[in-house]
Length: 362
Ligand code: SF4
Image 1 (tube, rainbow, N blue to C red):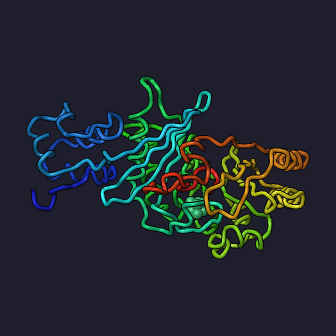
Image 2 (cartoon, rainbow, N blue to C red; image 1 turned 90 degrees about the vertical axis):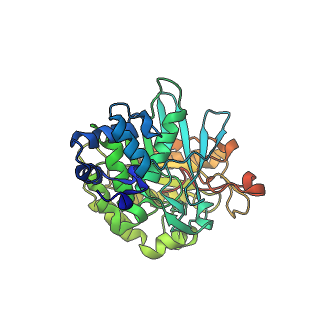
Image 3 (cartoon, rainbow, N blue to C red; image 1 turned 180 degrees about the horizontal axis):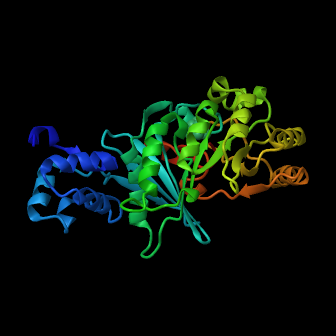
């Protein structure tokens, strides 16, 4: 084998086929590939010495030629409500965040897919960062491995939502690769696709590409006219009109008992009027869906305000009367800037400023 070419191969970056192709020329038995994958994903080892069902010679070879690229630079912020925000520093120094949200019998992890974001939604701090770069599949997976490392003994993540920093459909190849590893039952993390939700701010042309992944799809709507959507989600609306977005949703091949989720961030005096609720009812008519309302989480410099509890309740009531299945999402982790619209980079004085967007979004 060509040792030079294999130096510093990051095994966590390899797909299942990639791992098989890596093992074959070494003359190792083919099952070594799934053994290594199990160590990486199921046992979450960080060193080759821990791969105890490999021979000493094999472990030494991996140690000499390969890496397991997982971040060890992590800051953890714990909220009084049990939410934990993890700020991961990547190999190139960029930072991304993920948020662990315990809720009754659920333990949900909100994942980031980009450093910064392709889009520029006005209610989201991440949108102000611009796109720095896409995350690679193993950097998405690392967020899950890291969170699992930090949950209590016997606890297990139950749900994964791609709603952190970034627009998942703008990095769909890496997201799909990550989902494949997260759902693999043999050597991967064994999540049911039904426990995974991918959220988009409205990349209508790519929505159909989510269907083969068999995960849940959420759409961050937030406006009932193009005029308003242009104002609060300019880039998303420039790419696809509301009509095009809803057409893509209507064409989405939902499995029999599935439904779409529409996220709607309520912004005081912007999109929380009775007319907005009435238009929303009409727009969603005939779609198998539910609506999640999220009261805006303010961040410094944002032009938007959180509506009063009364206004939120009235909006919700109007939807209910219009036979829309509607839920109000509780904000979690606001004291550690881990709530919707509050993810981003922590940097000196900016530590007290919101970072990205967690659940408010896509
Ligand atoms: S809400 Fe989502 S898509 Fe919009 S800017 Fe924030 S992270 Fe990007």
